[in-house]
Amino acid sequence: MRKFFTALLVILLGLFFIIFAVANRHLVTVSFDPFNSTTPTVAITLPLFLVLIIVAILGVIAGGTATWFRQHRWRRAARQHEADARHARAELADLRATLAAAQAERRRLAAPANGGSSGVVGRDKQGATL
Image 1 (cartoon, rainbow, N blue to C red):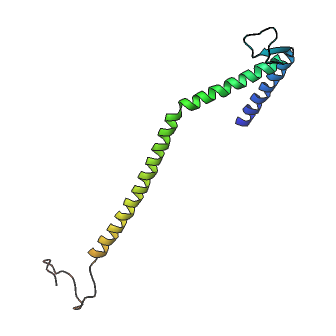
Image 2: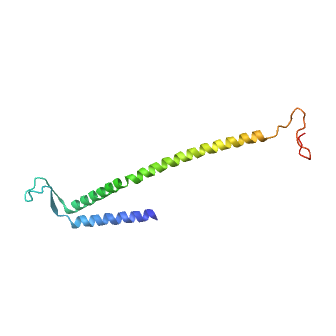
Image 3: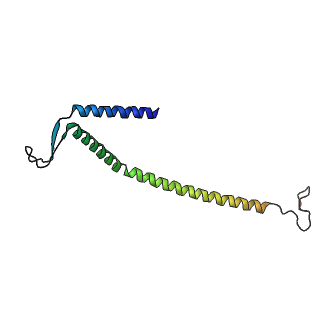
């Protein structure tokens, strides 16, 4: 469904640009000389639709660049938090491994040693060691 709406939107935008281009075909002169407007030294003659589309594209690029620069501190903070989280996960894994080893050692030491030299190891009814 999402691909259908995306395709529909792209088709409608393409149709809009084609209609816009056909309606605005006349040539305009874009001058980059602020001192001589009658015979500019740097000027380009283009169709109006092309001038407007180029200006729109440049506006999107300028806005995206400005947003990217303004969000620099948030990206840096996100990288720092990700590094801290990775460090904390590694430390947690080390602590869990150490705890598991200590618990295994404690179980090994707490297990009664069966089969001693006398053969009978245990406690009687009063709790005395035999």
